Image 1 (cartoon, one colour):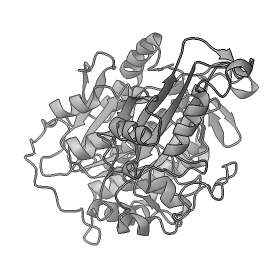
Image 2: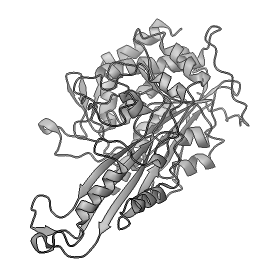
Image 3: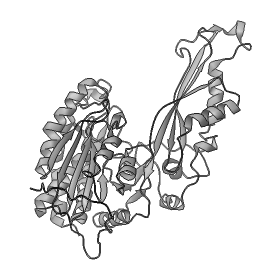
Image 4: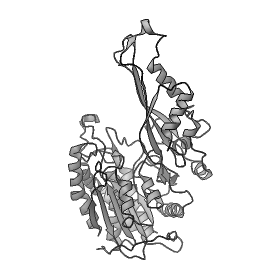
Length: 478
């Protein structure tokens, strides 16, 4: 059982303003991985924020060059207390999306953390600086309370998650020994809602698909040529409707998962989507109505139109355009084979009379999840139930995407994601914010898991250690 004194110190860290002060310093670094100047800020953030934080935890810290030249560096902190103890791998990302300065409400600066009520506004406050700060703080409090963690710690930071994690899979493959662990506990993405502590086990993947109907270089008068020459915009609309109908239902069986596992369906039985003030209400009749909203969001595939255009919609003229394009995205769950996505879409469109539509896959990221019967999940649920009177929501995966497959498929780890944010945080948009209540509860929950890992009891033992060709890490403990 986590000591009351540790819970009190975790809450005091937030209540005293120390969390806000630390997060303010982190948000001040404009670590935009999409901009060249962001690389400079990222390097400074690693050197001036993360290296000291990991060093304070007694970690030996190493920065690695990314094997992909398009990506930024990796930072690995390692603390080894004993080869007989379990090893925890933590993860976070130092980069943020574009700050979108000038578009925030009430003149807010994205690089200045601003408190208004229970909201702390600033770029990275929720994604991901505020989240990895909660975990670092919990580890720091645990170490100060006990003098040791009771487990070995490896903390991996990447600097290009917002750019698709370039080089992360290659880095993990090359550094398997250094990243070897018993379990991943990390924080990113949202909770189920603002008030529900949540564990999720993976993420959906995504495939970007461009449809291009490029028929002729010129536009022709709609009165003189209408009904005689093919309209690319009309063609594109029909092509899209053959893939996903006007009610959001995928029309191509090969783009759907083979089935929804019974364990996934059971886990989602009581999950309610859109439980926070300000959330949009799920639309009746949208998507596969044989599934619940939770099943559609967390257990099934969707095909969404992200952009659609032809000619100038703001200044239309009486002419049939020569070209129309759209970008679609297939969000898919683990178990879906997307290796032939381009061929599947092309063949489907050809069979439905649209061979003139060119199909290009723009990029993809993998889906993955830890099995719902993994013993680490029950261990984590029981640990969190010690300190929260609320039920802990368990999601098979979030609807969005994270590089979870690197940890499950390459490193072979069970993955437990404990998010310290919520769906309405406006990540990736102006007015991104962290809720102070989630920050307060998040540090407590993280400290609870870490304490349970380092101080197992007879009634709550750790899951059996995996039989790995483990390399005992060098002792870098303080």
